[in-house]
Length: 386
Ligand code: CA
Image (tube, rainbow, N blue to C red; front, side, top):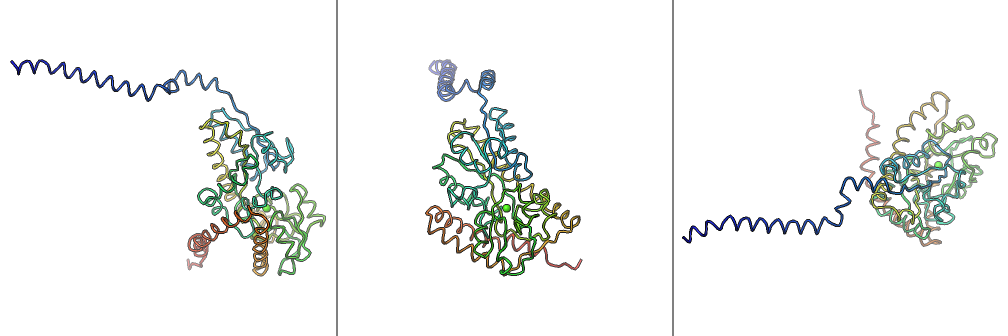
């Protein structure tokens, strides 16, 4: 009897337990899912997207519209942001002078009159001397090392700290790789040949040349060809074969010197107004971050792919004479560069802080590259017998 009663109660107990589990399960599900459940409803989600405001950004650049190489990063950034956000964030690119002059980019984005800008941090050295480290400095890091420092070595955090008072968020926005030393109308065989040399060379490189006895002149890119042709300058640096060929410098200068000691791997910058960035939804912020990383790497890829073809054309079709700067000259320029860093670090606290961090990372990268990239470049050039 007892046994029978017990057996007859089992289904009821099981049903009771199942009911309890269902209730508990639903109470848990409801607790965790209910607040966001409507966002996962397909029809409501679609309606939300349709009703969502399209955010329209303006991006001003220091380059002419559609400028090869340097100008491609802003266009790439714009295209990727628009595609990835399905048109919820659009970025209209304006070339230099269209909305603001080339060197008005920083102020325009800082004030919020436009949301974004593309250029190079060393253009703002008058406001922020330490900004020069975020483009390139003489005998400094190459593209690979800069990217490592910025994204995994604390560089980007320092850069953002430096731009914080200007309400700006900087991102790496491209890299040209090692540039060429430039186009010269006289041979450079010794340090003495730098004396009296009138050369277009901006930034710290220009200061180094001045101290070596030369005379640095800053002339906008569009006027360089004429300046070289008429003898206003004896030499100019620009970028590398891909960009320089397009400018036609080979028509007005005899010698093409390397390496670009003054710009061994300049990072271009993408700046975003901090309020505009903070107003974005988390997914749009992630899209801006990802698009900048893409645009940064893409520029280096393009230069890597196109520089050699342009160099071959310069040499084989136009008879350009490619020359290496003598060791004596490079060593002297390196010594002067170190003197200038030490002096500027004494004058400016931020310069000192960034220089200290930059130098520590650069020394580590240099040390490791001696047995990796540098060693590999040397060994692959060893003569083989076949
Ligand atoms: Ca340059």
